Length: 192
Image (cartoon, rainbow, N blue to C red; front, side, top):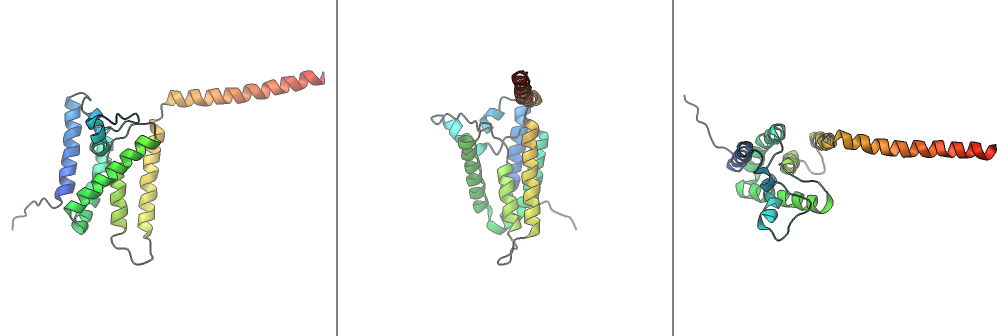
């Protein structure tokens, strides 16, 4: 009996293929492609490509670890969601999630945004609630949400440049230390 390979989740598999193709093409173009798949905080609202990036940022990924991390979750969770909700609803949910995360980034953050982490989190939420009984929240949902959000937070903290962190700490520690020494010297001079 021969086993056949089945394209079982067309939206998920096509999305994974597009993300991988963009990443590989960007490597061949030495980074020239990725700016088209990044939302920047200073967005040009009159530029159609800039507006399009509000949705397409989910296709671009900063590095191979970023791409593989997101695709692992998407390929694991996506087929379950696509089977439950259907391909067209999944496309709609992915587009809305990308648009909302893009807009949130533009209005509330001063960093660029790329990657499918928002879509991954949407999938985590949807899968966690597929077998929910009335009035119950699965502990697996809580744990996976905490782990995923924690991982994203730690990646953001790691991305802060070390020299900027040291400069900030040094300036604040120096100011605090010099004020304390200054107050002690002033107090000593008043006593004498």
